[in-house]
Structure formats: structure tokens, C-alpha cells
Image (cartoon, rainbow over all chains, first blue to last red):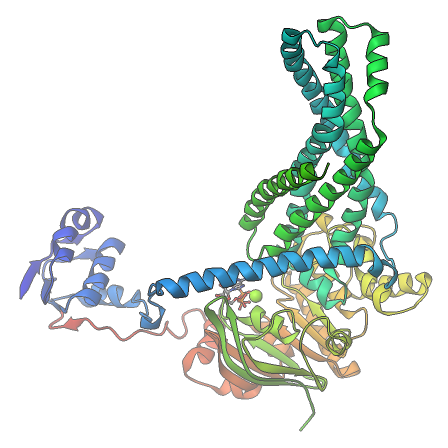
Length: 343
Length: 265
Ligand SMILES: Nc1ncnc2c1ncn2[C@@H]1O[C@H](COP(=O)(O)OP(=O)(O)OP(=O)(O)O)[C@@H](O)[C@H]1O
Ligand SMILES: [Mg+2]
């Protein structure tokens, strides 16, 4: 049997230097406590580990020290030991979990569309005035930054295109390119991405916080539908403001293009206007607004889904918000790519 | 023997793979205050959430007022839930509404009362929890204790025959908390309400409790009257009551050590 003579003070420093060798060994061990006068948490922990891993005996131990060791004795629940589950079980579990997530996401979408349309007439409306407030917050609040950014994108697009077009001597197409590019693609996409970052994240954070503070539970026990109460006002507010924001974003981007055309390329204002009018196609405009409407639903849907998914503590709110923004932008870009096949 | 208002049978609850409640069976009787006790994290709030159908049990049943609690959106469950007031551990007032709107919400949802009547009821309820001044404030503008009182007012606004309170007096000053105890007892005695209280306040337990459900690690350790519980002399329950009466009382339960002690000095 291995015998260890312990020093006067079993403290952290002694444990740091000596524990490696002691713990590495196997087989029975005898701890000689004859000289020991004090023991600290590190020393106690060492004895506890030895007790579990090796057959351990102690000798000449003082009562107070023994009490100290035993009073912090944890309960070892052997059933708790994590065993790694077999490969296929893990695959199955993860598949099943993803399936459940998908079902939750789908049910949020279905409920949002149902309570936002047909279900609206089913229950008493108790939140008059909330719609205006939400429109102000979700739409108007994002207007300034959206206009500024699309203007700059219009400028950048025009500058880059002007250089290329000049090489072919095709300057006059600059306006056509900017106008169509903005209407068909960049206006709706930029507006959606900015609102995803702003409105989508705010939606997730609000719902997640409500979830964490048991407010969603309280709503349910009071017989209210949480989707109807929280999501539907946002759904309507964004459906109403998103097309407006998009139209203004398009205009702002086109304006950026005009500025470049006038100052850098030196096109005459009259010519710019002619080209502009020629290239505004009503069908494109309408489709683009419809597209922005779909984007607005995606923003609210993904934003709420990530909010409702949260369970547990406050730190999850931040994580959910980050995930939500990334996923919303991803979903929007995918949707945009799909749209581009249709027109 | 008075009638059972809530019957829980063989309830097992899980979060993911982790079983939090093991095979719980208990009853809550009419016009009785039952206190649910247990160390932090033993599953009291979880039991509450399963009882009112917010979470679905892994197995077992909950029966409230003769209705089996199932999916939250089933009409029977909904109808039963209308008759239950719940005060959540952290108040759970809706942050986007004022205190008055919060309290009025169940009335607007479930009744056809006029706005004038609703306002009067809300003011009465606020007065009964001594929160008259908070009428127009938002929950964010209240202190923790005020939020709890507002939550109680909201739980009581539909005059439910059953009331659940998750730690009503935690964080309240002794005067307010004694006032709350009086309020609960009054409701039991005069209105015959069944009240389930989760609390750690020993003084308040001795005043209000008719019976006690003691949980440990998700299992029922004691389920019976307060008087009997106070007579128990050993084990965690005795510990619980002694401990708080007298801090030097019973020592912590010692685990069996596997250490082989050859000799001591
Ligand atoms: N959303 C959740 N997800 C996973 N585990 C949870 C969740 N909520 C609670 N738990 C776990 O369930 C157990 C019981 O929690 P519960 O909230 O019911 O305790 P409690 O008895 O109410 O404690 P306290 O007195 O601190 O409020 C705890 O171990 C906790 O870790
Ligand atoms: Mg709790």
C-alpha cells in the first residue's frame, strides 16, 4: 500500500505540487495525517477525489479535520453520469429535434397569418391604438437610415456602372441601369435587410424577454393567444409600412444615381428625366412592392419564431436576437434569389 | 372530508431528457390553503406550470374542477383556466400595458362588462392590494414588491375559485407580507377559494397553511396537514421548520463517508 505523509498545512500550494503524482496512482493508499494541523478546500477536494477513485485509508487524523472533510461530502449520484449515446441514436435525436423546431416555426407562421387575417374578427379588440404606435416604431423609425443607405448605394452603383459604360461609349444607359436595378432588386432588398436588422431583432428581443419573464405564460393562462396579442400588431404595422419604406428607398437610390449622372458623367437634367420616365415600368414597380410585402412577413415570422423559442434565462435573449438577425437576412436573400427567377 | 378541487395523479415532468418531477400525486381541497415547499430548484414552479396546463406532462394527469387539463387551446381547458388566477414568481405583468390595463385584461377578454364597470373593478382590486397610486404606471416603473401586488390584483380580478401564488411574499417587507397573508386567509374563509401557495417564509406558512406538500428533488416527501408536519421530528421537513426557527438547530444531514478511518487523534 502506498503511504503518503501529509505536511502540517495541506493548502493549495502543496496540492498544486503534489496532487499530480498522488492522483496518477492506482490501488490502495494510506494518508498519514499525523502532522496535519489545517486543511483548505483544495486539500479537501483532493481527499474526496481519492476516496472516489482509490481505496483510501486515513490515519491519525484529528477530529476537526475529519469533520471538515466529511461535512462537505457531496452526494455521488451514479445515475447522473453522462454516457455518450450511440451514433444512430444521436442522429435520430437531432433529426427529431430539427423536425420539432420546424413544426414550431411553421405553426408560428400559420397562426400569424390566421390571426392576422381571418381570426381578426373572432375576438374583441382590446389594443386600440397599438397599430399606430407599432407603425411608428417599426416603419418610420427605420426610414432615415434606410434612405441614407440606399442613397449611398445608388451613388456607388452609378459610379461603378458609369466607368464600365464609358468604356463602351454607352453613357446613356446609366440611368436605365440605376432605375431598373433599384426598382427590381436593390431597393426592396436593402430596405428588407435594414429592417431585418432593426425590426426583426427588436421583435425577437421583445418576445424573448416576455418569454423569460413568464409574460407569455401569463397571457396563455388569461386565455389570450400570444401570437394574436404580440405578433399580429407587428404583422400589420410592418405590412403597411414596408411597401412605403421600400418605395422611398427606391426613390432615394435613384436620386443617388441622378446626382452621379449629373455631376460626374455630365448628363443634362432634361435627358436624365427622359431616361427616367422611359424606364419606370409599372409592372416592375408593383412586383417589387409585392416582394417587399413578402419580405416584411419573413422578418416578422423569423423574428417572432426566434423569440418564442427562448426558454430559460436572460442570457438567451441576446443569443436569440443575434441568431434571428442572421437567419432573417439569410431567408430574405434566399427569397430574393427565388423571386429573381420569376421576373 | 371536503371535496377535491384539483387532483394530480402520477405526474412525471421532464425538461428534455432530465426528469424534474417524479410520479407526483396529490390533491387540493376546496377552501383550503396548501403550501408547496421545497428547496430552490426542486420543481415547485414546474409543478405549477404542469398543473395549469402550460407544460404537458411526460405522463400522468391533472384534473381541475372535474375537467382533465389537456392542450391549452382546447375549449374545456380554456374554460377551466378562466376560473384559475395565477400569480407568477416574477409578476409577469405585460410591459407594454399600464398596471390598470394589465388588471383589466382578463375582464376585457372574458366578460362583456362596460368600461366604466371595468375601471371600477380595477380600482377596487388595486385598493385591496394598496396600490391605488400605480393605476397609470407601467410595470417597469414599479418596485419588485409593487409588481407582485399588482400581479395578485390581476390574478384575482375574475374572482377565481382557485388561486395559485408562486412566492407571493418573497422580497416583500414584513408588514405588506402579513397583509397579504390576511388577504389570502380572508379569501379562503369568506369566499371558499382554494389557494396553492409556493413560499419559503416560515412565519407565513405557520399562519396560512392548512396543509403542506413538501417536495425534494422532484419527489413528494410529505403531503398532509400543517399540524402533523410540525410534529415530524426527523428528516428534511423537521429540518426545514427547525432551521428557520433556530439557526443552530439541526445540523445538515451528513452523507455516509466511504473514507476508512484507521485512527483519530
Ligand atoms: N425552462 C427550463 N428548461 C430546463 N430546465 C428547467 C427549466 N425551468 C426549470 N428547469 C429545471 O427544473 C428544475 C426545477 O425548477 P423550478 O423552477 O420548478 O424550481 P423551483 O422549485 O420553482 O425553484 P425556486 O424556489 O428557485 O423558484 C430546476 O432544476 C431547473 O434547473
Ligand atoms: Mg420557482
